[in-house]
Length: 507
Image (tube, rainbow, N blue to C red):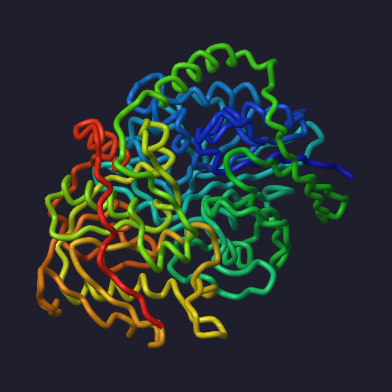
């Protein structure tokens, strides 16, 4: 019996230190703490599923310092990562950002459904390695094709991302007879319940269940959904997904007998929050961390009142001052008639004293602002999509629609709109709940035309708004919304919290 041990992380998002940066609390996460969990020998592989270089405030405040943006590679190199897949957020900073990251990384990057038009990136579709005990292991990497929806043409210049299924099918079937163990690393999630098969989504963003069901992988490692998924076997493929931010490491032991039958065992390892003091890169990182912590707490301005968050259902029903503030900033930046921002981005408190830390906590993604030209019919369709967020419970009271909310990220799909007045009637069927849309005192007609400011994720159709992809782009400023909010506060000093957008929801 020969064994191969795999350690697997995904969606680290730049979290090195054991903190969320919301405060100074030490938390059980971060690669500097998780580093103590890896025990490598010649029959061990350390793998990662992507989304590595965007997310934490540590990396966000370094992202404009070319050549110094990715100190996380030093830690990954010390740990001894062997192979990494690419995540959708690893494309956020374009070709040059990806090149800087990968050129510093000792691990081999794998992405079968990526074509590098310039040929300068150290990326291959798959790799085959022979362990000391003679086991031959094949590893194939891939990323969700939705990168094409979320990133601009400018950001993806020099890169082509193909639908992953057909490419993976070809590579996996080619490698199958050459290896003892075939591993797929897919930066995408599961489109169905891994145990019952119940379909969650058919958009193509996530196809993990299909890959496990139809392709000859022994082990399929997934990511993207930020959802701990216990190991399960689907049609002969063993698959799982770890939680994000290096808050857990999957240790998978594969034992292969003389008939090439594989037995799997998984242990979930969790960091304590204690930093591994043996890392050579630690002193440099501590110096950067200290300067970042001080920068985060520099005063920016004030709000005339604190903004609170009273739970997702209550805020979705009654509105959010933070949503109104974000919409105000987006409208000003885009010069648009309307604006919309999502519920997930307002699940925070703010003020009255504002710092960079507070704003980056309140808006944690590097979305840029875009303005689209939309019709009244498309506006109504967008409102109907948001109205799907609700259902009525047994008492007839509004509740979160459990059919629509399968993962934490599904809260992204509910938007608050500014520049219009509107009404939902939740007693009506989905698709027919919008009963009123008023713009500047006039009832909105299907053939009316507006400009609307959106974040780049939503403008790409993300979250179930595919019609936005067909709308003409009137502004693509490539300015990140957190930076716009910071600049807005700096410019104004004291900010009056806008009134909640005019909408009402009945049942």
